[in-house]
Image (cartoon, rainbow, N blue to C red; front, side):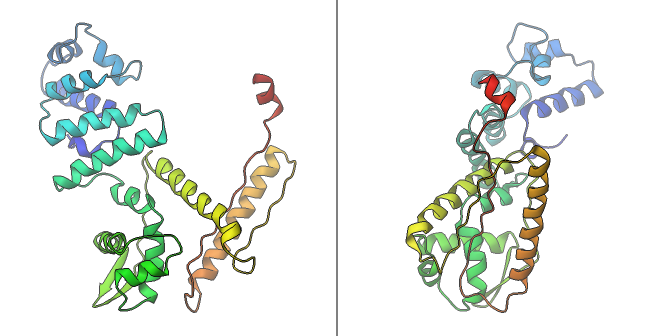
Length: 276
């Protein structure tokens, strides 16, 4: 059975634990539930089926019943908090707790590197700046950033990207590698939404902060069908890919830019409005 740190759903871990015990013995849900200190013989089965949930105290009891102890028990409890989180912020906090526990015990978490990379604007910007500033100190890189960032934050970002293989260090210079971080778990939409919010706030500041010659803002308000929406999304995706190719073929980096492609509704659909 995989270690608990390789799971991102505590129910799946519990089910796998039950299946493994059942495979080698006459283990039952009744026995599992009793060992966890609950009276209903089917309670944990219902938890695994998603029909009910563990409380924080229940997580402690079930974790102990599965012989988890130390950081693994703490990880399981954070995993329960993560799965039950109702907001992006609460889910991020729980996941960060899982990452911290794993890091302290030299264990890797699924999508941990991708989460860390997209958690802050600093990493993508530094990854673009460092290779075109050979010999630059973290403080010098920090001064090139329009948003305030410390030399210490830049140093931590560089160290992280070298460890994760996003940058390669050659003496006092950095090179970008071909490695890309792409998360597959359900934490990635959470951290990407956080990144989009952060970049959207920078875009709002840019309206007044930079001259029109240094930034490009356009907008279009339109009434369209669901079919048209799909066609427009395809065009935006094709446009983004063309722009990516232009950037890859660029002869040099004078500045680091951020491009936000945003298409969002300003009205409800008629059926949604009736529901309101």
